Structure formats: C-alpha cells, structure tokens
Amino acid sequence: MNMANRGGRLIRLPSRTGGWRTDPEGGETANTAGIGGARVVKDTLHVLLVEDEPGDARLVEYALRMSSAPVFMVKHVGTLAAAIDHINGGHPVDVVLLDLSLPDSTGIATVSRMQEAASRTPIVIMTGMDDPRFASYALEAGAQDYLIKSDDPERTVGRAIRYAITRMAGQLERQALLERIAEQQRHLVDEVNAARAMQFDLLPRPERLDERLGTLGIEVESFFEPSSGIGGDLWGCLDCGGSRMSFYCFDFTGHGIGAALNVFRLHALISDHWDPRRQPGEMLTTLSGALKGLLGRGQFATMFLCTIDVDAGEIEWASAGAPAPVIMRGEDYRFLDARGIPLGLSKSPEYREYHEPFPPGAALFMYSDAITDSPVEGETLFGEAGLGDAIQDLLRRHGELRVDHLLDEVCRQVRMPFEDDLTAVCIRRLKGEA
Image (cartoon, rainbow, N blue to C red; front, side, top):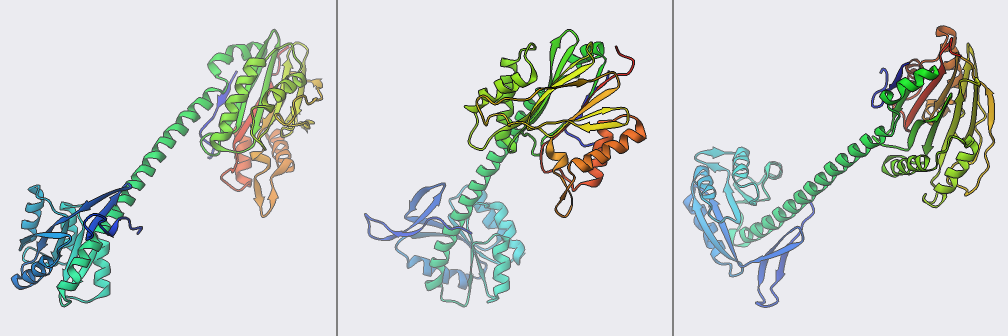
C-alpha cells in the first residue's frame, strides 16, 4: 500500500506632513512637525552649521539671528569630524547646514557620512554651484534641501531650514508607515503559514490509514497544492467499517483565506454529520442544507462523494457539480456523470446516486478544475478532452495511471503556473484482491 500526499511541490517539476502655521496664542509663525499624526511646536531650533569659511559662516549666522520666530540657536564647526563629534556628544540638533567643501571631506560623500551620523536629522546643503543636476544628486544622497552661497542668506536660509524640517518629518512619517505595513505583512505571512499547516493537517494521514487501506487492498496516490498558500480545495476519506471506505473531493469558490475558512467549515460539517449508513446522495443533501446558512452571497462548493465496497466489488457515488471523475479498467476509461447542484445553494437539493462494478484493478481519478480549466494556447482550455487524451496515453504506455506521471504530462501542455488550487487523487483496487 502506498499513499503519497505530495503537498507543496509539483513533480517537475514624497508626501509632506507638518508645515508652518500661526500660533493661535502668540500670533507668530512657529515650526510644526508631524510624525504619526502628532504635532510638536518648537519655538527654538538648534542649527549645526558645518562651514570652514569664516565669512560664509558669519553671513549665515547673521541671517538666522534676524529671525524672531522661531529662534535659531547656532553651533558653528569647521570640519565634518567636529560636526559628527558634536552630534555623538548628545547635543540637540534640529537641522544641519552642511558645506560640501570641508578640509576633511568634499562632495556628495560628505552628505552620506553626515547622514550616517544623524539619520533622522534634516540636512541642508550649502554649495557654490548652481547646478540642478548636482542638487538632484544631493537630495538623492539624503539631503532635504540645498542653498546656493551666492543667494541672499537672509532671504533663503531660514526658509530652507523650515522646508528641510518639514520634509524630514514627512519622510519619517512615511518610513514609519512603511514599517507598520511591513510588520502587518509579516504577521499576515505568519498567519497564512499557520493556516496552511492547519489545512494540510486536514488531509488523510498515511500513518493512520496505511494498515486499513492495505487490509482492503486499496492504494491511494494524491497531490494537493493551493494556488496561494491556502485555498478552497480538500480531499479526504471516511472509514465505513467492514469492507467499505468512502472518499470525497470538494472545491469552494474563490481563493485564499476566505476559501480556506469555508474548507474548515465543510470539513467540520462532514465530521459532525457523517454516518456510514447514509447513501452518498443523502449525505450531500445534508451538507448542502448545513452550509446554506453559513456561506456568503455567491459562495458555494462542488463535491464528489463515493463509497467503495471491496466485498461487493462495487462503487456508489453522488456529485454536487464536481469535475467529472474518471473511472478506469485496464486501458479503458470513462468520465462519470457528476452533474448536481453545488453545496450551499439550496437547503434540500436532491442528488442522483449511481452504482457500478469496481473490481480489483479498477481505479478512480478525482481532481479539481485547475487541471481542466488551465489554458493550453490562446483561449483554448486543456478541458476533459486534454485530460482524457493524457490518461489514455498513460494507460497504454504503463497499464495504469500514476498521479505524478499525469501531472508531468499536464504541466508539459498547459500554461504554468496553475491559477487555481490543484488537487489530484487516484484510488485503485490492487489486482489479486478479493
């Protein structure tokens, strides 16, 4: 007896926030920065001025002293190393005015080194070059704004500082938002992985069934893989006792978490309502009625349910609109009549029941419509015709159908990857069994 659940593998196989506003109490303009929806008003801003030319430094300091709201507290240093030491010393710095031609650092690399030391502090570049491309490089390197030294500092430096602070606040808020989104995605991945493990746990376990199936002379091969980690397919088997064993395969509309939740619902209903004395059609009627009040609008499941009696050498089945299973004897095969109302659309649908011989050597193939609905080329689908041809070819070449061989053939012909949940189950009676 060999039962393989091959789940998990195929065989081959800038927005700105904050800003400037009029203080309703003082009537003066003050800086406001927003992170995560909070607004903090600062009347005093600490400016770190990194400039090695004393004349240029005095002009900037004079321009900032002319501002009354906010008040700028300026710390002037002449090298990048001194600036980094000042920041590392824990001194408050709200903005850095950075010259790119310093004794110990020049060019765009100066921005990168400063940003490494103060990643959350806005940087305003001071340069003697009026070059739009250079300004663009500086902004890409991490600066929030830039000043041309030939411009009037009294008119431009305060405005540049305010804009740089506002822009940095927006960047920090976007970064915080992206981090929250990433954390939510990590949680979602963890939840999907947990749900996937739970769904795979619903599948029949070989260690629990090998002995029983071996006693009945039944062999089962299977492949199961949801298209998005979790999905709306499932197959299973139910021990009827004696010489009888039941098998089912169902498929809910939709994909992902919603479909997977419905899988757990139906699996629970099967466990609650299962009675081996019931005929397959009666069982489907019960399940459809139980699902009717649980599913949302437009949701339903197709299902095939059969019972094999090895002593009687017979199979009986009923279908709720499932893809037509294939019954095989030797090199002959035939699609079964699988018409019926899908589960959950009616409270008390009636299902026709079928009986036919199922002697040793006979096999039944159940599958989801991911196989038949897969496109081959253009608008053409693989369909029952493609599946039938593949089965017939394998039966002629090997004398029996193996799930891995069939999926290899399907994957060779259809457009990959599969866009739907994939289930394939082959149940065969071993030859020589009574």
